[in-house]
Each structure stands twice: as C-alpha cells, then as structure tokens.
Image (cartoon, rainbow, N blue to C red):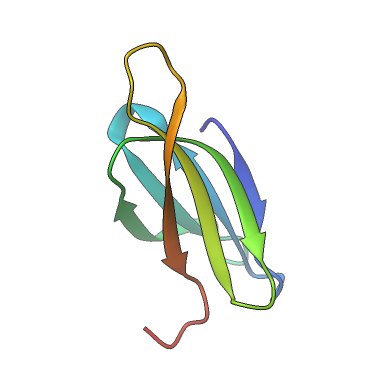
Length: 79
C-alpha cells in the first residue's frame, strides 16, 4: 500500500491500495483483510479523525498526480 493509518481500537489498520483504487481494513489480530472499500480516485494519503471516527483519504484524480479530492469513510463500526 501507499499509506496506512492505525485505528484507535488497536485491532486494525486501514491501508491505501492505489492500483486498485481501494482502501483495505486489516484486522491486526487475525492478520486478515476484513473489508475492502472502493474510493473515487487513487488513494494516496490517509488520516484518522478521532472526533468524527472517520478515515480521510486524499485521492488523486488528475493525471499529474495532484490530490484532487477527499474520500471519507465511517470507521465508527456503526455503519
């Protein structure tokens, strides 16, 4: 992956997979991918917003590689 961010529960990380335009939620206890999330564009940089319980992914949508947007994924576990 290009980048990763740890989730605060200590049981998972989110990894960006640019070639597949995807984020993968990795269960660090079981060493498995527990979810794959498609994003619009190529995810490059990740951040976790603790207050909102979201993973923010900067995505490239331009051919020159400039960050062109933000994909926001609910990481609260409630949907």
